[in-house]
Amino acid sequence: MRAFYDFSGISASNLMDNTVENLFHSSITDLKNRPRNKGVVFSLTVPIWDWGVNKASVQAAKVNAEMIEHELKETQKTIVREIRSVINLVKESANRLEVLKKSEELAQRSYQINTRRFENGDITSQELALDQQRLTTARQAYLDAFIAYKLAVADLTRKTIYDFENDRSLAKP
Image 1: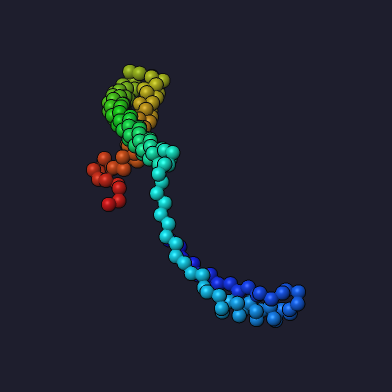
Image 2: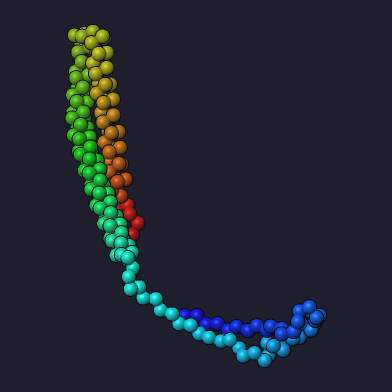
């Protein structure tokens, strides 16, 4: 919808014979005597034939919405796969940690037995040093497994935003 109001004054005198002041007064006089040009316009556009533009834009919007939904589903599947992978890593690390803990305990017992045997003179210092090396290797393997386990738990906590050790959510309510 539009509205307009127009006014203009045109001098009817000869431009060559008059001064600027006469031309101005003549224009003002014409402006006062002329009827005003007023109007209101209301227009409505109804497409009779849109050549399929509207249908194409609706179809494009539907395709875009389907693509976004598909991407969301794929992202969810990726997240589930990653979390399952991390859970498996945590389980494997925990099992490895348990096995290496038993191996370390066994190496500790063996070292204690061989220390007594060394004190009794049954074995040489080289054999005792070798047993001490086995104990050190077992402890180092256990520590490496413990670090791997803690990293896997931290990765799981980061990906799920949940602290499984303290059984609480880390997401802010």
